[in-house]
Length: 239
Ligand code: 3SL
Image 1 (cartoon, rainbow, N blue to C red):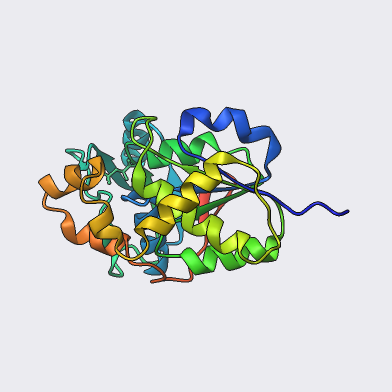
Image 2 (cartoon, protein in one colour; image 1 turned 120 degrees about the horizontal axis):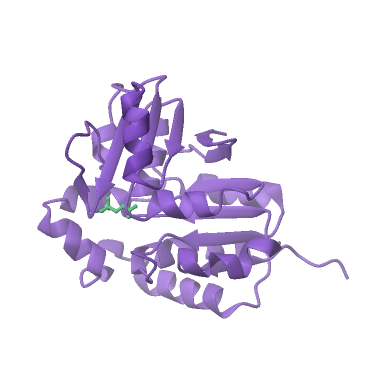
């Protein structure tokens, strides 16, 4: 019998090495807010995004004249013009430009998976587009949540569950993995009201304190773009 491709979920970046060898397709998710910001920036015309893990790397790019976005703990890092709010990219300021991005967790997770052949960026914003592409690709998929400082986070796990559910219900994928089942159940209990479900979650509270409720609502609204960001070389581009 021909085996079906599998779908698995890795909840935190520090668990990624346990899975890495088995997958040539990885979808990195940081719903609040890095991967939502990336999808939005591409949707509004950014040409390339270079994800960097450290502020030192970001400063080096800034000194070379690049546009650089830097976020730590939800805030724009002082000295940088751009941050990680997806809503701040809903304009054509950076159309056709290259943006360098560093964030607390999301860009680190992306860079952890940089050697994977098909590295894709997922979020609720491009949910159907990414699922349709994965179905077409027909290869085993690992969904990697960015978490918060290597700890579990609810919003990425719910989005991982939404992707898993869409793939599994086609009957073209299979999963024998408890993390996928857990993610799927979290998605099923959250799906009627993501915003309400996440009320007590740590990052929703963190962003609310920074008056970023509008960002949260936007990031939790599925299917606002068909953009599928993929890694090519050291940068991300639109598929
Ligand atoms: O952790 C990250 O990469 C960020 O997305 C966090 S924040 O939403 O900008 O606070």
